Length: 140
Image 1 (cartoon, rainbow, N blue to C red):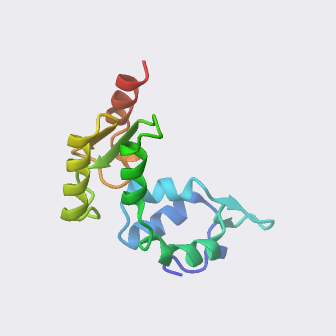
Image 2 (cartoon, one colour):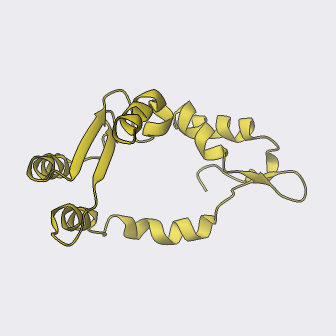
């Protein structure tokens, strides 16, 4: 709804420009439009189910992801290793969450918290070389 009727746009670039006019970063708008396809008339449409996103998004904040993470890395029943990468410019992380993550990284040798200082939410878009460096460090 924030981007209006997509039935009038024929290119990803046009939709990307529209998203930028809605105050989305250029890199994010380009990434979002990469999932777009065209309908039978050649107009742009989302490649994902928009109604489903609207249905599940309100429930996202009610999930206890930290509890699941804590169980995963502290449980004696698992040998999982978790590397969490966050963008240093991402303001969505609360002080409480950051403190819990830091504490978990100190208390578990199976949990690593990595920060890409110049990246926002989309770390793979904002700092792909930094993300690749972390990946290579632990997967070589």
